[in-house]
Every structure is written in C-alpha cells, then in structure tokens.
Image 1 (cartoon, rainbow, N blue to C red):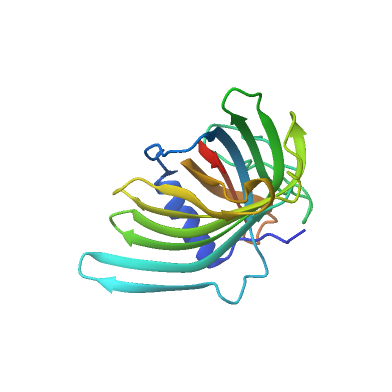
Image 2 (image 1 turned 90 degrees about the vertical axis):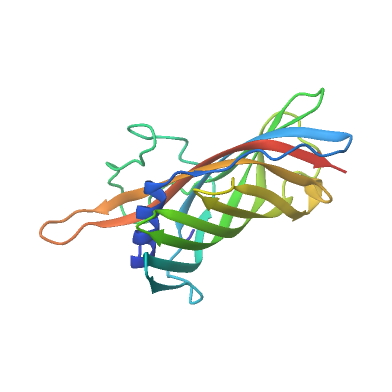
Length: 234
C-alpha cells in the first residue's frame, strides 16, 4: 500500500477542484455489435513520496495567473471506502484513524452487455494528471491518463479472464468550455480490442490525518468519482 499525504501542489489542486466540479459528458454513439453499458465508482489518494516528475509553476498574465501542475499521481487499491461521506460532495472530514489505516479505494466497475445480466468487477485505479488552472477565472484545463487493473469479481457472471484484465485511457477537458471527454486507448484480457467512453464526475477534498494543537493540521487528499457510458467489445 502506498502512503498518502497532501503537498503544496495538491493543496492548490484541491482548491481548484472544489471550486469547479469535474464533470464530463457522454459522447455520441458509435457502431458495433457487442455493446455494453458501464457504471463505475472510483476512489483515490495522492501518492507519496511525491514522484520526482511532479512539478508546478506559475505564469503571470495580464488578466491573472496561469498555474501549471504536471504529473500529479493518484492511486486507489481495494477495499473501497464506499461513500462514507457526512454530506453530499464532502469527504469524510471527521475520520481520525492512525497513519496508513485509511481504506485504499480503487474502482468498482459494473458492466451490462446488451440483453444480458450485469457483472461487477473490483480493481486498482491510477491516474496521472496535468492541470492548468486560470485565476481569477477559476477555469481548469485537464489532460490526464488513467488505467485500471481488475483484481476480483464482486458480483455476477463475469467472462473468463476478467481478473487481471486492464484498460488504459485519457481524460481531456476544459472546465468552463467544451465537455470533458473520457475514452480508453487500449486494454488487455477481456478488454483487449474494447473501446470505452462516457461520463465522469470527480470531487476532491482533504481528510484530516491529525490535528494536534498548536501544530498545524496534517491531512491527505481523497477523491471520489462516478462514471457511466458505453463499452464496445470486439
């Protein structure tokens, strides 16, 4: 399990994400015979120690500042927390477990092939993000890569070879401009030759690790996301 902590660059990212929900939109349909719908729920933490490729810099412009945050890494590994929030769109702020005792997260993916019963898969999920935040406009450009690896079948009759299957994809969005687009780029196992695209909505917030006065609070980044759309299988 990877340790989790919130650095200065993540702090800025949380503020930006709380200001503007990261909402995607289902894209137009596409051809193919083996269609399925999907729903997923993803939970992730910031990765530490901070990877050496993570960088942040700010460019001063006439109408404000442009902050570029490169290679922000997040990761989730089952078991999932499963939505223990006190209020809608808020993380579990009152958790006070010992260091390293947070549930890990990951992905829960439910696939419903046309005319068949659904099956639900559990797995790890990771994401590498590029954010460009414009202030005071509070607009965010995101160009990120994600991947998941299935580790278990939670429910239903999944295809043989589901465990160990992977999928990789991209997220490209302009918050305040064109809709977010999420699509897969490749897959292995049951997802080899498959194509996914759909809706993705992410919220983020700090979870307190400790708050020992007079020391400043220590907190970690937690994000939770929901998604839905279509998968075209070969």
